[in-house]
Image (cartoon, rainbow, N blue to C red):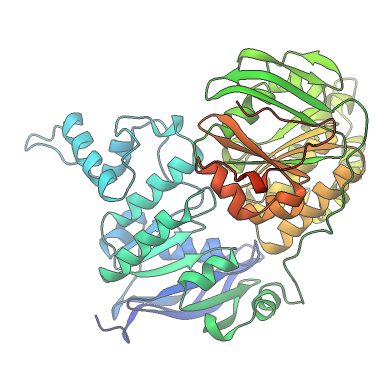
Length: 516
């Protein structure tokens, strides 16, 4: 196929869910050998369009064409048959099956008698993983036991391994700490004749790898242009329908004197070893690390999800033993987890019910829930997270990722959090929702709360944090003060390199970390 020819054509596609218009008259062309970015705020229609192209959702109107042939996929398997493969942000892997079996689905190779040999599947999976630079994952490992970042890589490999004509990547770096791995694979796929539709909120990624971008707003296409001729302001204003600049709150230390809000001494658990640090009231303490270095274990141990092997945790000067998240919550320590869909929300409940869960026991009378009291409590916190009241009665699964995350944060606040453990809280949310979360973090600290903040986006750590701890091989390898914070220094320590003496931070009063 010549580069000037269309690989995918979308013509006047529309989709409604009752009175809600998800897509309206959307048309665009993906050319052969091209990487086209698809942008838009949460709720703009990006996910619906991906589902339509992937065969998950049938459009109400419009046409699609692949290489000049009409394309009407009935399901994901049918889409793959036509050369369209998707790596979903909300992963499509089966958690109770092994990596090898997931890679072989939906039709694992069997003998002439229809028997599937697991050993042969694992050997083939090992070859595929090695080809795509994921040789550190055992083919027999259960997907549900892998970290989110590893599952994201398996999802991407499964989409790419069939050399599709059209590859849809939906927020592919949302849980990846190593973007270069993905970018190298995209380059290789383009050389093989694949065209890529790249959905992302990260403008630096769009500028780096995309030739063109399409912007959706409220289900309609509002921009289709070469990336090189657009300014950041033009892209943001097209996405939001207003002037919008991706900026961080003005950095101003709100660290308060006195006993630390959280003190961790010699903490060891599965995946983390001998960690010491203190977190002051009013402080935003960052945590950085490449994928799989123990950061998830640290947060889970602090939240009562992982038993300690050694060490101690003190909250406001009192020693605590957290055997469950409920025990941690009673002490004011609340985790906002990395996997919003699986660990953060209750999909069958409304947004209001998701938020009110920690205090629902306080909103009853004669064993009946007082709905007026419940709503009144929830309405106290939703302005802080900037969640509109109209979303409260809706099923939370119907909300955009950004609004779901705001609901999870509102639940943490209503639970009485004094120490927030935020694990990649802006993963997969748009620019507007990110700014709401940044303002929440800063306001929480200004009012005396303490924040432990992990992010895969290093610029967030640089601009938001008072200090940053860097984890390497399950231990804290170094600390950077605000004055010394930079992406380059974080990456140097995170990669196992010693911090140059000239870049060593000054001691932080009453808040120190021991590198072991």
